Image 1: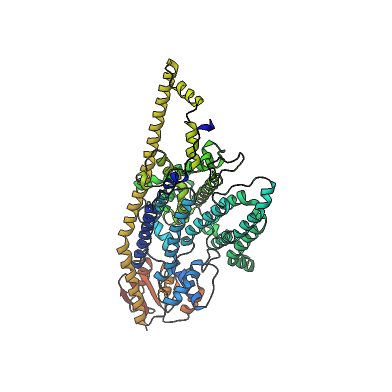
Image 2: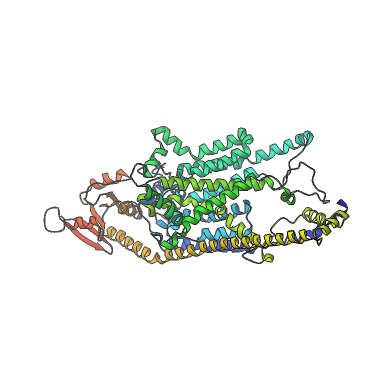
Length: 638
């Protein structure tokens, strides 16, 4: 039968291999620029609204810029590192303290997140149109998503790009050189040993980078720990021998360097950051399991993925909650089956055929088979990390007590987007439902000479093949009935595939549509946020005109006011009963208590303002009132 195999000229296949377009990449760049531009416009309009927690990080950046201190932890606690403060400190030193300057590094991290998402999707086996879809989903920005990405309040802006970077490094370290063949024989192994050693040495910077990113993020926010463990398991599974040597030493050195601030502080003060995180997450507070399950599994995924309106989830926006769980399971099953599938005839298309078109020898490893399995393993690791984050959040009382605000703990679900959407895309592709005509996209599979030769071998005009063909169309009763049944089966299969593809396209369209509605809702709230920021600037100006240097106020007033004035005004926290509250920087309280002319500041209409209004009047210890739009300033009467 080999007589029927014809040599295919190499030039005949070259146009098909090169039939690609830059259109999806160009569209991805435009979509990414739109996502970054949208967020920059929000920052210029003072959105999302800032708060005292973000101002606390800003004060750390201000102290670093001035050389007055180099804090390891978020002020007032023994967890959540100050990486964002160190990133913003050079800008604060150049331009002075402001919310915009504090958030510019977060915007840069988001742009990096989009770029890494495109690259990771491509490395995991997705075509350019799928990578464009992933970028489009991540470019949308609802209220909760924007807060996670842009508010420099500790931990969240850096989590997503770091998770993508770890996954991309894992693929690169495990997959090796694309298209490489395994050597055979002792002589070949000896000859390839120097090259293998050189390749392992060249990968050392990647091992060190993997450890450094992991260490930095474990210090900054331990929420990424499930992804570190899952991706680390993939590394151990594929490169365990390499990890025993210099690669393991490089990874350990990077990990220790990144986590050095946390480790040194823990050794110095005997602190346990993990215990502090568990306490802060609400593990010691009461919440029913019904409340936890509702807040974690029903409200959590739509809020975290950006499918809810500002501050709440409408009933119709909760459709993503069951869809997320189903997709998580389907994607995990798909990745596991790919990972465990043995090599078959389908892998022939990935064999590295020689230039003369000859088939490879028996026992050669198919080029691309390792990459497909590595891609499946990394997708499975991303899904496992997302499932672990969701499970840990659902088990915490924070999901039941404050589900809307605490959904920020699920921001890492976005890292699993390429793996989560993989079943939808492959189902749509299998059904032939492509977003653009075939000639605008990429080839579905590899266009190698060997594939054409194998196909021609099956239809070669030799005697045996002709006899098989005649037998298949022989006009006997049984043969005709079998053919008709096979035709009916094929038709039913095509209908099922088409229906599944339509469902997949509907889900993808629903995601984009729901995300767009939530993004529009976030845009609609910008004018109110900008007006509130203007009122706060008026408060700062009024305090400066009055010569006030020390004030007392609520928690959500104090550090925001102190950062906005560059510490020209220092604030001590009080509760609604005028008792001392939680000061993240105790030095501020000492300064305020030492000033007999310290004023009081409260938002108009707040319980604190109502309590201070009782002290207005002619009696001893009375206060004088100065009003600013949205604020009330109480000055001691002399």
